[in-house]
Image (tube, rainbow, N blue to C red; front, side, top):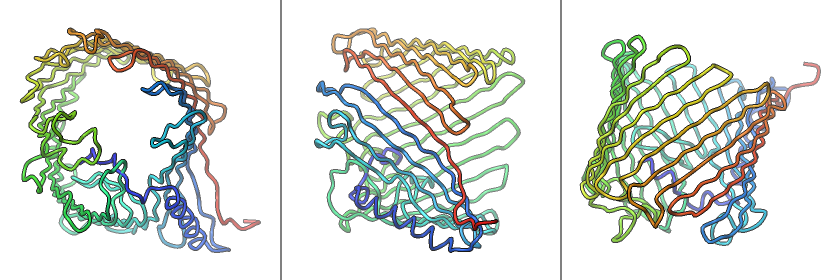
Length: 438
């Protein structure tokens, strides 16, 4: 299930990440020998500097460098290399937990082979897997291909990359998805995931995903997931989209989640199903409701939405509201919304007000976003929450952009939270292995 993207094992530690990065560069050199045609490399470098205060009052100033790049056209086949990772260092205190001033993570790094036929792909390394019930990072292999009759199959396996895990030991993960489709009409998929820790089954999940377009302007999509360990359905989430009919569109959501089955294999304390914890394993919630969009003209649009929440323990709640937006393409946009949550408990009784605007001035863009949450009953002695963000960006060149954000918030957890966020984004592309005079 998707919540497990917040897990990581020791394979994400800096030494192993560095070794994997070196291996990738060696593969590039091996696959693009001297005299071979030029290969193309493109990517982005994102540098962030943030100033904020932690819950215990510590002054934090983490500096992050995110790097993503892709190397295409390696060798005579459709081979490419993909890399994404970050390094971080706190200039003042310890931002990275366990009294650490620095941190790093290889988010993905793999060699990919794509065949010219059957939509076949093989990825090897630290791969991202989004196949049905699986939303994972895996140190291993992922492969996918189309078969006859609209059939398709994908498989993956290796060691799970997990963040904040409290469970020691060796882990393995594997699974796959089988699908059948009629292009433009429907796609249905069945998926499976198995994760072992020290040879004992830790997670065993199955999923069904569906997309159907029976007629023009009617689309139905969704998924269901089942926990074989607890022998219960984790969730059902489905959407019905109608339109656009002239200026009107209608989207409807229907979903159901069983906390006991959905969070049964969570590895972080925040999602642990323990007595007195944040989540009650006996809780179940259903969500049902539509959202209507109406385009008044080319600039103005309005929408109204309603959702009925049914909690077994926290009780029922109604969430509804409206939004209006104004937009001038590539120049200006603004909006305002008001929503109300009317429930049976204090945390399900509040009103939300929001206004936002953005403007592009030559090479600069600025934006403002302000939100207020008014609680009908005080939480921790606080009856209102505020948040405001002012952001600005300047395009130095087509590839280099500078930015700065100033955020202020006040809520039941923070009396005052001020954050400064500085950004430097650079897009690059170059050629590797090009011979002189070519």
